Length: 259
Length: 117
Image 1 (cartoon, rainbow over the protein chains, first blue to last red):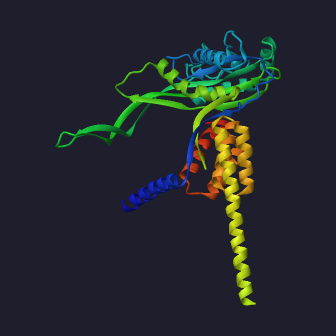
Image 2: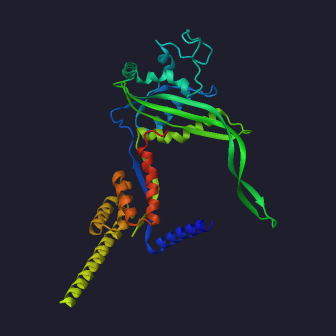
Image 3: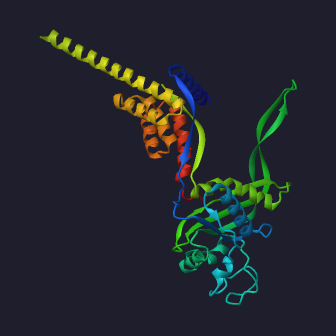
């Protein structure tokens, strides 16, 4: 306790001393961030669709396609191609045995419907479609060689229990209000969003870049939140990073100039 | 003879100290001018001034700090990192420099992150 107090006092003293001994000026700056991907060779972008799963409450393919197209339309210089999302799951399964899916079919049987994707392992049988150069080259030719955005989207419910810290109001004998942190056991539920965005060169059909994200949100067990609003909340968090892959951004901040 | 030697050493020390003080004084003028122009948005001129300051007095942490900020503003993130590292090395206890560097690292990490699983 004494050591911690000593450290706090010494760090405070360091700040005060630095401020007292130095003339300083706060200045606003804008840091330009270069895009991770050089897209100067492309004039169009085609968000082709996603292999999606996790929950039936949200169509991860359609919602992600729609959201990314609208974001790119307003925040990138590329022209967004409006076309139906590609049936990527069918393309992936075409000519292959259906994976041992969770819809009751035996392996090797002709599938009675699209296999259900419940977790990350269920996505694996579809992953090879993104490396199918001939297929993407053909799509590229069809849409005048755009930059193609595709990938996988896993949006699934999750439940977690454990000790969490929360603030609690307490009143002392004089009636004064204080907020103190208390640790309590809580059961929580929510959603986890794990998209993988893959950028494909529409001229050659090859993968240029890919990135994985993971975002989650948890609520009290007695709180109900619609899956779709949780999906948008989680996508909101990673959209800036997705956009910074394709277009340059300026990040505003302040710094301290010293004399 | 011994007295002469002591006197020579004293003179040399004094002249070295005076030269160092002169260098810091000259560098400080460049830094002040750089601040004035940066506040008017003339960042290229500020960079020129602060680069001059670090050439005149390479031990001037404030000049390296300001130069790092200017590089950051111009999007030259590699140079900004090097200048911040130099400033921190020269004055490890300076909380302003440390704060600037932490903010820079946050942005730089975001821009260089390729796969944030």
